[in-house]
Length: 200
Ligand code: GTP
Ligand code: MG
Image 1 (cartoon, rainbow, N blue to C red):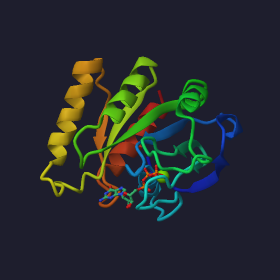
Image 2 (cartoon, rainbow, N blue to C red; image 1 turned 90 degrees about the vertical axis):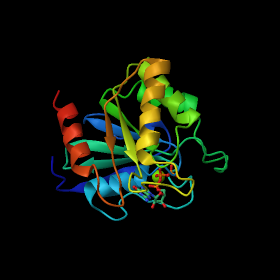
Image 3 (spheres, protein in one colour; image 1 turned 135 degrees about the horizontal axis):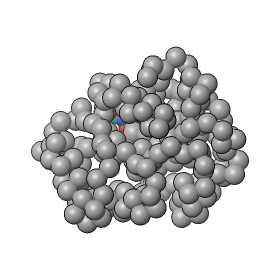
């Protein structure tokens, strides 16, 4: 599961403008600032192939990255960020319908969840929506290097309560991986996981 090359294939405003769906692809979904673009950079070991920012709302379009000329990583705008400029804000309900439900080659959604904070309703709702629509999903916990935040909340406890909440409330238990784009934790595990999903 080695990354030999990565190529930015362009940004699309609407799902129908995306590159031809002829290759397996994984979509990065999650709240603004959760670390979607950073994780792409970490996976492909490039500093800024995907643009990142301290400020939420950086990624505004659907960005396709072709890995090893054979599969796509797709960087998406985050949800849960109310202050994005109106013109750039994505209509999430039509977007999810238009892209997640119709993209034939979507192997799965990587749902990124910030492990440095306790579970957020918007992420639980999102996991529930993906589960109800039978789209394969992997929960990717991000920022696991922040073992304890300023309020004393712990990564391992946050992860445990997130898993318990989706299990109890929605009866779903997707596979999950702990990652950090800062330290590279989980990078090889996630690449291997994706290569297994592609070969099913
Ligand atoms: P949007 O494009 O706004 O939806 O955000 P995003 O999910 O793409 O987040 P992005 O990758 O731009 O990262 C947001 C901030 O979180 C940046 O300041 C990153 O440096 C930081 N960050 C991302 N991943 C990690 C991580 O694993 N550990 C730590 N400590 N910080 C991280
Ligand atoms: Mg981004």
